[in-house]
Image (cartoon, rainbow, N blue to C red):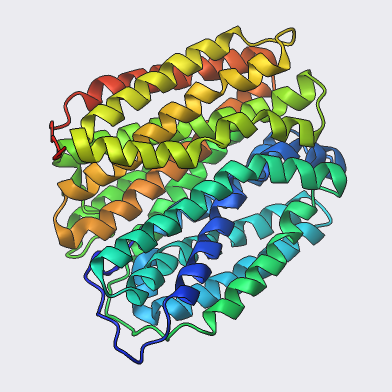
Amino acid sequence: MSSTLLTKAPVAGRDAPAPGPALAAAMLGFALITLDTSVVNVALPAIGTDLRAGMSGLQWVVDAYTLAFAALLLSSGALADRVGASRAYGAGVVVFTLASAACGLAPGLPGLLAARTVQGVAAAVMLPASLALVREAYGDPGRRARAVSLWAAGGTVAVALGPVAGGALTTTWSWRGIFFINLPLGLLALALLTRVARSARRPAALDLPGQLTAMTALGALTFAAIEGGTEGRWALGIAVASFGAFLLIEARRRQPMVPLGLFRNTTVAVAVAAGSANSVAFYGMIFVFGLFFQQVLGLSALGAGLMFLPMTGLLAGVNILSARVAARYGARLPIVLGQAVAVAGLLGLLTVDADSSRVAQALLLVPLALGAGFSLPPLIAAMMEAVPAERAGTAAGLLNAIRQTAGALAIAVFGSLAARDLEAALRTSLLISAGLLALTTLASLRLPRRAGRP
């Protein structure tokens, strides 16, 4: 993301357009983006049956979107600045909507994967542009802060509704419905955008060599994790070479896409590590348990989605609570406490098997959501405070990109394990996630203690 997203917005004049349509359009776009990171999971068995896709194909259905989204987040903020946030957002919504239609109409797996990749590209353009629209529309800092909170809440609600909406659409209609539902929402976002003032263009440097090598490294690494074998080893070599080239390019550029010096800051390094572990646990478990509920327990897609409802339904409230705790006691307490609760929840899920009661299975997922939701907002805030103001947008884009990449790699690795033995993979995935979060919990103790005013 570009740093201009976090600069002071101009104060709206008396004749400026009402800010409500900008906020509504931005919230709707952000909700669409986040919905598509979670709505697909419970539909995967139905997609596999209909398109005759194996486990690796199902992993790519999720990761084709996530990887394109994550990789392009590194520079999409600069693109939004160069063309203007409103233009970038409108173009992103149009492409996202058309790609959603292509997903729903896909005659086979290759077509679906291509359309999912285009969706991810469009989502990466939409995300920073949507936040820029909000910041441009609200000149008063207090109103702007409340608007940004509402924007973020839209994404949280979409994540929470994703598994249930995906299950309901798949069961009552078809897996194709999870993509067709984006069409009226995309058209509504475009209608709202017509009532938003056109954004100014701003100069911003694009790091095309860095972007290309980053995308190659992430794609090759995920291919190696999903496909394995000889092709996987070649892909791993390409990933290592591309990542080395990326580091070399970023170290030599005057205006790098990823300033490597940021990682010398302890708070930044811990925030990136903890955010990545959080994504591995949260998105990895939704993926694995979505398969477990349907393929082992024999639940319908709707039944599987409802199993996630107690877990995801608490996210928005926990996000708000953690922000209040951080304001009073500082960020370190909710970050450490949230991760510790998530670790305990993951270990508790080791008791789940085919004979466990459905109520117990659904409730045992709750501590993971409580911990993840409690630790993430103050973690992001701590990272933003730890970097200079002119680097805040870059740091935000970097954190989101790495978190999305971590979630994609978790699905790649856990899905490869599940292809051999789903129940064994479930336990291994839980242990890996718990171990990573335990390490980042300890690392988070190094964060500065910043007590807020009571």
